[in-house]
Image 1 (tube, rainbow, N blue to C red):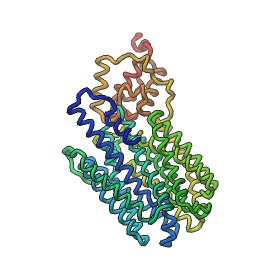
Image 2: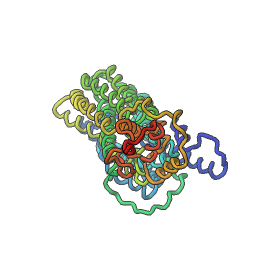
Image 3: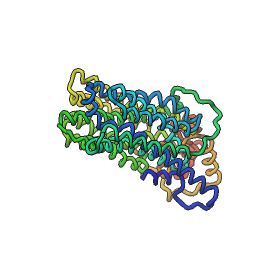
Image 4: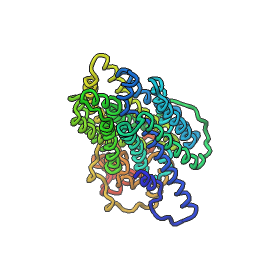
Length: 515
């Protein structure tokens, strides 16, 4: 399914009128998109292979619950600097070089788990997994987006998010089944992963050489453009919360089920953990249909239900935990993918790799940080009680994040309030020229068609605001309401938005011309 989506995103869904150079270019785009999706799935799966095996590691090596959460969180702690390091590298050196580094480090990580005979090997392996996935995330997302037509950029972010979550689901499910029914449960999953990484290395070698870059690579702290900082912060908070809930299931819920609920079947434990990500992947395609803002709000609502269930039971009831896992998965998919789509739609072309890496930095910290808090709380409380307290705190924070989404303009826009395509005349030469000029002069997503098709929630909200402005003050522009792209807080080209609105407003006399 992901391969088919990557093919459509690369513009190869139809029949080309030029079977020569254009078709070869399309084929290269399809190969690059599939390679990026493949690497995201494989490296993410490898990073979460240990999740259902933590109870076995804890028994074999005799470490505490705090060390358990630290081993899991080591991945997130290393991913943070890796994203800051390799995000600008993908922009400056090209994604192929960064992808090769990521595959090499991932192979080293799996080798550490194969040789593990103590806690030290687990910590080094988790650190290498974080470094590898931190390198690949921004570069692979950049490849998917660069080989996607402008009209499908929203779907590109959804495919990247689905690939990331698909690997997160495949890892614990496969490891749990192997651990329960196959020999060498702590070795065989990582040997299979090494074979998949070898295939990924071969596919990366076939990618086209990166273009010449005018700037040098140097690691820098993330710098978000001023016009998108508020929306970026809100999206980062939404994704942080979504991954915090998923991190609880990936890190501590297996141990809670093993101790409190008495579940010894590792396949069942891996299935509960994997159900979160399977439901997440199933929910993500709806982001492209309903828009990034509505998806985040619905996702936060589902996360709230899951957190309430965990706050009551602490994960000690298998049946309630299964329901909570399904709700958490749906909420995670909508909230996390919606946040990624909202940022992807407004990220400048020459900074997309760095901005995407900064966003995933918040996601990784969310997946590991709260789990460490649970581990610290186990010094004074049982593990299930610590889960209940953390879920209660997150239950209070979730509505606040939802209010932030509404405040920043990514709330639901009724379809009946938007201009319809049937009543809008075809843009004239001047109007079309304004749209074309706007597309070339600004790195953000903007077009007349985006206002009618809801390809991004940001553009839809801008049309919504301007329609109400025209109704309140017909013919008179609001003082201080900027009409240039550089000062537009909505983050999209205003020429196209004004053209889309003016085409649907009835003619009204200008009050200033009466005298």
